[in-house]
Each structure stands twice: as structure tokens, then as C-alpha cells.
Length: 284
Image (cartoon, rainbow, N blue to C red):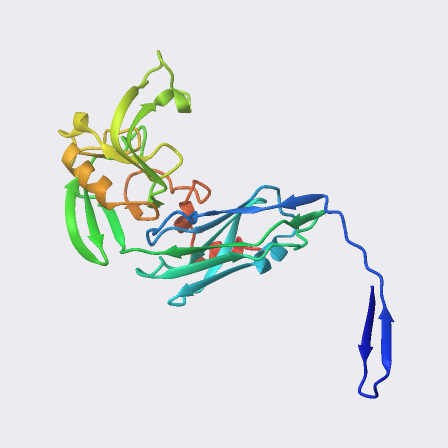
């Protein structure tokens, strides 16, 4: 490359230099959750960045990832694996927030011969805070929006043999109808406790098979005993209300279920970690 310049003394100055481009061993791109097609999410939705190849230099990746929230809310990254990083604030997002996530990865050296392939970004809007909490006695679910109580519903959680996970869960999906099959976790036809049943109004709250759903078969136990395989059972009418009002990113908090804490790596178990634990999971 030759560069010519005309100086103040009207003399031409030339400078020559040589450069070469590298051949990356791997080009990696990033996908986001929430996706750009999600118009709004709940206050518990973490920002998820998934790389299609492992990242060796996580600190370099974090420097290329920027999060801006309005109003401002400090947050931190946590690496679930070498290819997936989550971002959340210290407390739940404020209702009405707008969050901008930018991955300025083009040409970034991510270590081990892996380079970023392209820049991309997403804008996330946070809707009103919908937050149901399961209380210990009586067995009920109290749903509030922006701090005000809206509805109280009798529920049935996981039985002592199949207790529901404790702690904050985040809605990650919902479908009108699905077939729940215990064989998906190893309890197959002929085994004690086997079931395969069509279930309506299913709101997923973990990747361990926990849903809030309609359970007409347990209406008699709802509010008095826990008889499910880990899900939150509601009457058909209450399940319809829940399905219509709760969506991706909303918090479902389960307490005193007798079960273990929801693992941090279970889809969006992010809020089960203390702020110190969460910050320790980052690269920088």
C-alpha cells in the first residue's frame, strides 16, 4: 500500500507499507434470546447470547457485547458454557424498560483461531410486571402485576415423590395443547408412575418438564395437597386466565415445595443465583 500526501510546504511525501490478512480457523456468529421478533418480554427475561462455536477468550467476547438499558440498570454476564452467555441485572428488570443488546463481533479475535463473523443487535421491551408466587399455606398462587394483587388461585404442586423446584422460574414457552409423556425422562409404559396424556394450556417454566397447566383431574386436591409430577396444576378456568395473562419472561416463583432449588443452567434458572454468584460467573 502506497500513500501520497501533499505537505504544507507543497512537497509530496510517500509512505509504503505492507499488510496481510489472516485466515481464521473458525468464524462464529451469535444468536439472541429474546429474538428480534419478540415484541415484549417479562421482567425476568435474561439476555441470552449463543455462539455457534465455542469461545476460548470469554473476556474478549464480553468486551464486544454491550447492553444499554433505559432506565439505566447495571448488570453482569454469566457463562453457562463456552458457547452461551446470559446477562441480567441485580434485580428484575424495571417494567417499561427498553434494553439494547449489541454484539460488535465482526473481526474480533475470540481465541484459538476463532473470530467473530458479523455484528448484530436487538432491542428488547419489558412489559408490566406479572409475578405469581406460590404460598405455603394455604396451597395457592397469588398473582400480582406491578406490585398489586390481581388474583389468588388454588394450586397443586409436585408430590413428595416428585417435588417442584424451589425458587424463581421464568416462562420460556407456552402452547395451547401438548402430550406429556413420562417416558421422556425414563419412566416408560409398564413402569410405576408412567403417564402419557394430552394436557391443555401449557406454560413452560423450566426445562425439567415443569409447566403451569390445566389439570381437571386434580381440582379436588388443588388448594389442599400436592399431587403432580412437578408441575403447577390449576383448574381449567384458572389455567385459561393464567395462559392468557402470562408470557415469555414473566416470573413464576415457587416456595416451600420441598424440592431442590432450580439449577441455574435450567433454561432460565438465572435468578436462583445471588448477585455475588452471578458476577463470579463472568469473564471480566
